Image 1 (cartoon, rainbow, N blue to C red):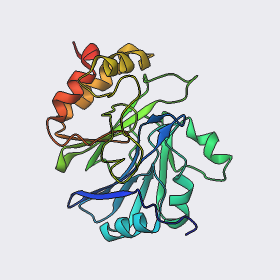
Image 2 (image 1 turned 45 degrees about the horizontal axis):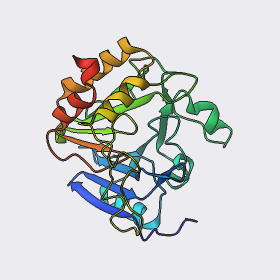
Image 3 (image 1 turned 90 degrees about the vertical axis):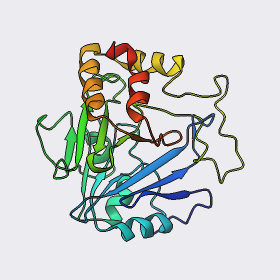
Length: 250
């Protein structure tokens, strides 16, 4: 493995079956969004990974302690930089992304095994009995190529998302860093604030589809929310989601 360990990486066992990998990250080199990967062990012993941070030796060791990796997930057209790295270390795993990633990854020599938005809506990739999925086709549009997927680990009532929900500042993600986690100007971007509500409303290019999918996630009644950017919401996840998407759910 070429990449070295990252001293600022925070590895946390959220539940016996869920481990997160959090690190500092600045969007556009300015906004301290933080980054996070999430690994989930299913009842079969197989491991599902939302791969959004580097696969360091420490990361691989923690994931391998959970079990064999069977799925490597790309949440949207932005969180994809490390998919090939994960695939190289776990060649038997299936790489599942979104339609906009097909050509991007093909240019890098990585062929996706499945893609939300391209495959039939009722396509099953093998984990759906335990991890539900909702493809937000109305989030952004094809011009921005950033439709997102929400996943729900039913047994732990944990919602896992990339850019569908933020909870900034990301204190955990910057806890080993000398850089500040404070978001410039706003100070924070969380599900209860007006800025977040305006953000998700503005990203909804198909309001009807967004309403449909926001209701699907609300119906899952998540307790915990693990997002790529910001502190994990440990309880009252349903209330947090309802607040962030209130303009769609009203």
